[in-house]
Image: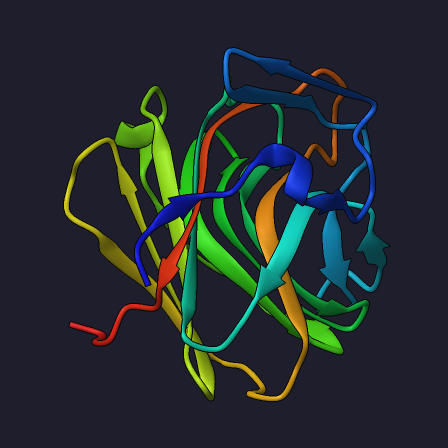
Length: 194
């Protein structure tokens, strides 16, 4: 399978953002204040209103999303969202928290977890997040600009689950987060972890 761009209009929003504009091929989306995705763990709450623009993702495929944003608000976030249903999903990308930009993933199977590490040097860069779907897992990689890929996460994922994936954004604590999504591509899943 050769890599190909996914037209923005081929996706559908899980929760539509309050403002979306297409400008010379770049999708600019503004997150609603209070939007997020999380289930139960540590905080006790359930949020399922992050804004994700998704299209089908089959076993053996990968999806890449590139974006920039002004990281300012606590928990501002963007990346790739993989959706099965309200209780089974993955979000992977960057999140601004406690003054640092973090690269990580939340994997949810009825309850959410969170892994994260600082990437403050990526704050002004175009960031790309890549999800590869294997028969029993999703593999998350990310990079800033043309840097080498970093392995972010290997997580279990059901082979027979009908999944969709694509760009997402959320702004749990403020209004006005605008993310500029510059690319959305589909291709063959990575065939190795290393």
